[in-house]
Structures are given as C-alpha cells and as structure tokens.
Amino acid sequence: MTRLTDRERAAELDTQIAALLEKKRTLDVKLQDGERKRITRQNIIVGGWLRQQRPEVFQEVVGALTRPQDAKAFQ
Image 1 (cartoon, rainbow, N blue to C red):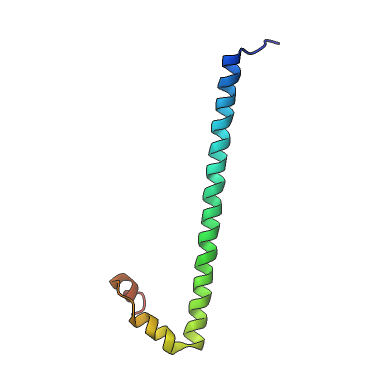
Image 2: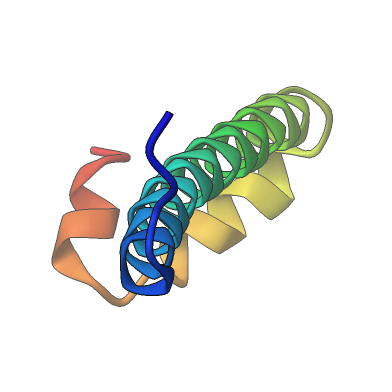
C-alpha cells in the first residue's frame, strides 16, 4: 500500500470539504423551502379563517392593498 504525501492528503481533504459544503448547501435549501411552505400554509389558514369569521376585516385588508397585482388576486 502506497503512503500518500502531505500534498496528496491535503488535496483529498480539499475534495472532501468541497463535497461536504455542497451537501450542506443542499440541506440548507431544503430547510428554507420547508420553512417557506410552512409559512405559506399558515397564511392560507389564517386568510381562510379571517374571510369566514371576520369578513369586514378581510374586506378592509383587501381595500388597503396598494399593489395592482395584489388587488387583482381579489377581483
């Protein structure tokens, strides 16, 4: 079995570090995506509840929208 030089071991470690960093980036994206989906689901639930239980507040919020693309979603 051939023994690796210090330079070869360092190169192997660099390769392993790069692979681990890529795995971490992938996991971070997955976590962010899960959090975004969770928040979206919460917003849907709260919006549905507000529409059912407090329609006057719901209409007030819709009336306060200033961006045309937001207001269009409620037309």
